[in-house]
Image (spheres, rainbow, N blue to C red):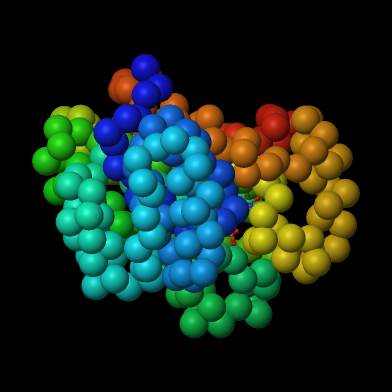
Length: 253
Ligand code: NDP
């Protein structure tokens, strides 16, 4: 039910953080993973690590997810090298932490392009290939900011709220193609992105520890299981959902 042998998965931002945690899960379940990001040194290191997990030989393809031509080349390169595409994880993301009155239009666009328009570009490019294989899986990465707001994250919160609604639209449009589209809403996970946030947002570490019922930050390996579930036949009748993976953060009053 959770076997991904023979499946091919693109993970954007798969060279580090949550993307790497999900890529580890998919590779261990047998999938061939395409690590899709900009920094090729990081991508090569991720591929070397994933190669030890047992799936078919992983590979890296350079992409800028904000660029349509680059995304088209990613999907084309995947199918040329691997013969098919079954799973797309839209994980690449960024944040610029400023209150709305200090955020410039260029900064707004950078966050929206990287976090939300990228999911449209990658899903749009992947859809014909997923359809060709008789069905597929798209996993979009939202955030606690898909649910809550924060004064320091206006563009980020808008992009992550948008991810949930975009997920529902695609799930609805492509259900008859046997393509399941779901979102994962991670809680506070220890990655480069949040290490930077801990430096920029006073009291963040203490607040996360106090508010998370599990009493700890998530690790990237906490993200592997949900990726395998949403990428596998086990979730064949699950579509359009947004599943928190947050140690209980979102149920705490
Ligand atoms: P990281 O900063 O560790 O990873 C971000 C990844 O995105 C990197 O692999 C980076 O690779 C890639 N990336 C960024 N911009 C682009 C681009 N233009 N084109 C291609 N790849 C790009 O952050 P996280 O692992 O923490 O974040 C991953 C996702 O999870 C994001 O969507 C984030 O919003 C979300 N998230 C994270 C949470 C957390 O607590 N950490 C909580 C909730 C959501 P490269 O630089 O090589 O391109």
